[in-house]
Image (cartoon, rainbow, N blue to C red; front, top):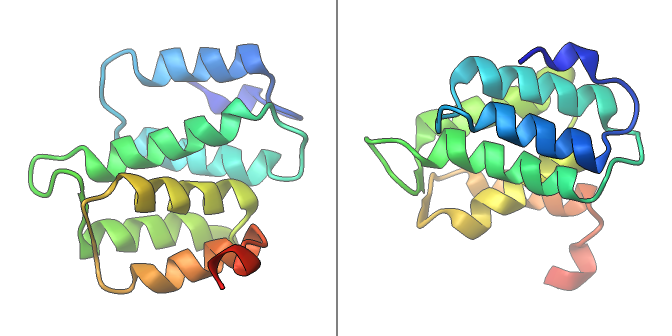
Length: 132
């Protein structure tokens, strides 16, 4: 699926369309994860449908946590991939922060260093008061 056709705010029908296409084969691969990351950067400032951040979290969890070697765990290599995808443009946006929170909620084990990424995500989402 070519995500370059999506510009502006992502609507609910578009979220459903992307979800259907991405999960058609049951696996999120590296190319899909990278393309989705580029989409997140492109539409980060838009008023996207609220279900889009859920899709962002689902795609991150599917790609990083649904593997044979470390199922439901974020290993150091996967943490590196996540960091690279998030900071490719130099900053973490709110959609990427939601991905971090989704991984925190879904993973049974997190690589050392994830806590710093989580702290950054909470800062981006202004959740500091909630965690204090």
